[in-house]
Amino acid sequence: MAATALLTLSLGVLPAQAAEAAAGPEAPRTTTAARHTPALDRAALRSSLDAFRDAGMYGAFTSVRDGSERWRGATGVADTATGRPMAPGFEHRIGSISKTFTAVAVLKEVERGRIDLDAPLGRYLPGLVTGERAEKVTVRMLLNHTSGIADYVLPAFPGILQDPGAVLDRNRLRHIEPEELARLGLAAQPVQERGRHSYSNTNYVLAGLVLKKVTGQDPEAYITRQVIRPAGLRHTYYPSSPALRGPHAGMYESFFGLIDPPRDYSTYDMSWASTAGAMVSTTDDLDTFYRKLLGGRLLGPAALREMKTTVPAYETEPGEEPLMRYGLGIYTLKMPSGSWYWGHDGAVFGAGTWSLSTEDGRRQASIAYNLMKYQRFDEQGRPLPDPITAALYAYMDGALSGSHAPAGLRSAAPAGALPPLVDRLPAH
Image (cartoon, rainbow, N blue to C red):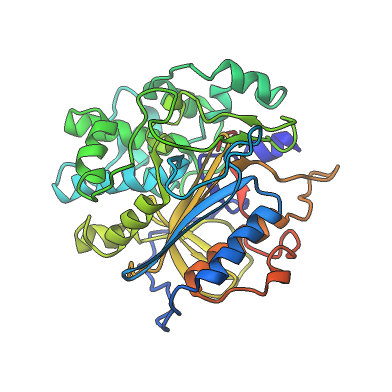
């Protein structure tokens, strides 16, 4: 069971099914209903957030925006030993939400004519990407995860399936260069053929190395100057040490029950995540980022259209509509209420984050939480009923649509009743 679960692990949370890309990129689609969304219902938001805690989450904090209206909330504990409460405005490790920032940086270089989305990687990384991949894998394939290149995380943490606590403890202060991460992923056995969506952190480490090649700058510094600062984000950064700079919660990793009790990994050298998932942010900053991005204030219209050109994020039966489609560093997801939203999720050891927005950038909801891989499986490796994930979906869906489920129903959905959120990486 652990091996099966971890082979799909990544810095983000996506459907467990493999995705089959179309023969070519599909045209962008309108994914958010045009109907009016009700104003923020603060009492319902508070109740729904507390239901997430009551379902078993240690603690969470959140920000919701609709036009000029805002609501911030927190629930549960930031420290399980002391009972220190969670608070709005904490910094948090955002995992694969970092991918949206990396994709925006690449698209800025596309706008400047220095990167061609459909150029082969051999043009930019000839000494690193070789053979058939150098000729047939394009920059676009990195950004929409159709490259067929495997994930590097399991090779970077040998032994993690057997003794995750010992392996994670041993690597707390280990520094890994992005080139080493890329080589690990390039050498690993792919789980999907090229052209089919298969979520891989190696893609976004390679995207960072493409940025480094064409700009001559460290990619994290480039993203800071060209994306984070223009977006006006004051608490978003790549950490320069294993510790976060500002107030934050403990970040507890359960690893599907193999670490018991869950252990705090809020202090960790995040070089292992690089441009695929090392960033720190706040839920307020994430709301601002996606509002400006989808509102056309960070990229021009042509680049934003490219970003929103999607492929199916998992395989479906003939005639069945996928509930998630992946673009360039951003996905669109159909929530249980029936509405589609744009954004990304992220997870690292102990820390989960999810940020979604209406397509027009008017309404956003972001949530951060501090217990990961809480899911459990039966002896056949099948997921057991998961009230925590059901409550997470209920909160985010209600925050975005304004349609909040009755309190007694929020955490009652059985496993499989909602689009599956699966921790895709040992740290995510």
